Length: 516
Image (cartoon, rainbow, N blue to C red; front, top):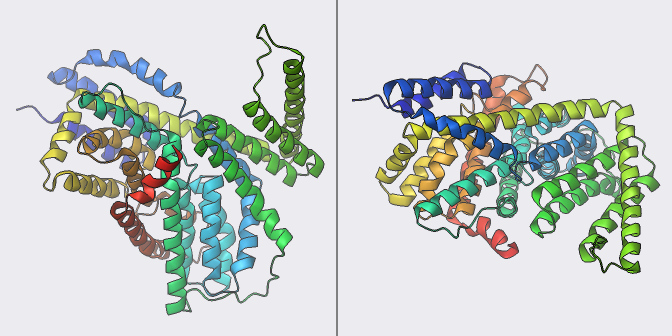
């Protein structure tokens, strides 16, 4: 009897990742070793490796994944330019006088930053350096304060635009197509990034509501854990509130609105977000208001006018009106370009540009390297028969479709204790999801359910990334044990959130059906 190399391969991958080697190299090394071992034992056809180049080319030319570096750039610009810090300070002064108010402000700011940056590490570190000391000075329980900061930072994974949701949309679309082929359907449907964004919006807000409700109830039951602010701070005026909150909200509406309304693709909307973030950062760095507002107005007018009245001057019947509109559009584009160039020059002088581009390149490279190597891993795993084994395991579980989904969710949750969300999404989900879709589960609802589960992986000890991010940013009097204890109630709230989405699928399916 031959060894089950597919199962051994999956176990070896988890083991080597836990040893601390770089993830992309670990995945590639395990895949190479088991491809050679499978060839030597007759369980793997080495000719399958000929498809590897085509797989890599498909990943690098995938129009969905092009949006990732642009969204990362948008988030990093907002974080490095201290726009997020100003937002947090303003919200803290606004809600701090009520019991549990600082915690509420942390969650609301986390939701706003999630929708405008989507970068967990940046949000957690910023919150840890700004909000956590303020909460500790005002008598908050160290464990509760740490748990709130960690949890608010993870909202960037479920509230769109999110790197996780973009990756999930690509994975689920491929899995949905694969499931339809197996059903004998060749006029296939797909799952778009816009559908996933729309589906995740309401569940993300439900999670925010659960967190805030828990904070307020705990502050009422145990006033010593989340008291009102003791420090005398001036309540922000309407102008200060608007100046801090309105720009991120306008950016969020512009990005998500363009995608949900079908005006722009995810990559185009991400470019809008990146340009908007650069202009906002430039204004903070000294860009004159007239130039900032003029650039925004020119670009907005160009987008609306060109959409309503497109011009094709290369056509033989183009007349004076078409050439006049083309000249007007060119003038608007030039005005917008000059404003963006001036903003870039301002942030470069402030030392922000180099750090922003470096962080963007590092994060993007890490994500794409993992996706590419996961494609290599899945090719070998499928060649060893792993795909059929996973389907057989799910079909043999008691409880039918419900039991299979319960097992898959529990398996993903357990892996979240040890693996990163990218590794789970691009390695495990292509194997688990097609059988679940064949059993009748809605792919969009399934995407949101799994995304909330993967969001929990940032909080679960011992390898939750939010815990590591916060550990590096907190004062020395906060212990690792306090951080771990602080996230436990919020992990339980994540489970409640998954249960609510499971019990009421319309929370995830209503908006995408209404919009698309």
